[in-house]
Every structure is written in structure tokens, then in C-alpha cells.
Image (cartoon, rainbow, N blue to C red; front, side):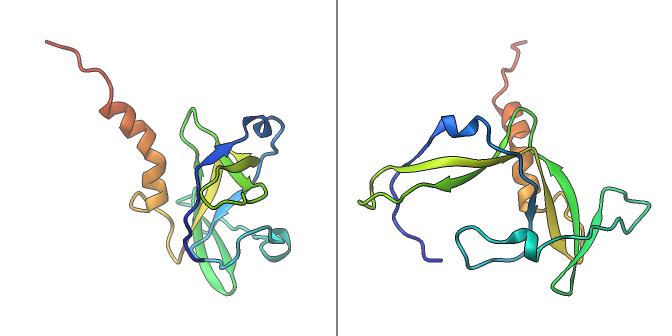
Length: 142
């Protein structure tokens, strides 16, 4: 999709109340679509645990390709939000309105052929709040 100049966004906080929980899957692909999709119709994973020695790794096939995945929690004290934009503003630089469609506390991260590990960008990003806390912590004077 083409990048476009967009104005600031305002999250409508009342939409967070009563937002349902969602099961999220981060797939190693790009989908050229922006909007709702019949995901349950096209992606109903029959998840397998392939390695008894590594019970955290799951396996599934997607369009004939082997995917390996792990369930990853959102950092403690945080909640994931799935947002949707309301009616686009008339002026491109005008404030956009976002509502909470659903929330999540974990997501399934999938890779082609290999399980996600510490070098995957999403897993590094999810570690950042703990790292930032350490960086910005007070240091006792001696």
C-alpha cells in the first residue's frame, strides 16, 4: 500500500471498555489488503507440537508451507490493542479517530521453517519495556 500523509490520531478511550479479547497470529507474509477479512474461514490452524523436547514450539502448515511458532506474552503491565479507524477526516491533515476493536495479552509469532528466537524483531521489541526500565532506573550514589 502507498504511504500517505496522515494527520494525528486520537484514541477514543471509552472504546476500550468492553472490547473483546482476540487471538492474534503474526504470519511471515504481507497481505495487500486493509480491512476486515474472513480469517476464520481461511486460516483455521491445526496446531501441532512437533518436538517433545521443546514444548513451547508449535507447527502448522499454511498454503503448503511449514510454519514454526511460539506464543509470546505482551510485556507485564501492558495490553495489546487492535485499533480501527472511524470515518476518514475530510482534510488529510485533520485528526483521525481510532477505536479499540479488541485487546490481546499474547500473540502467536510464526516463522517459515524455523521457530522464532531472540533475534526476531517482534520478540526484541517486546523486550524493550524491561530494557528501557533498566536504562532509566535511578542509580544509587556511592
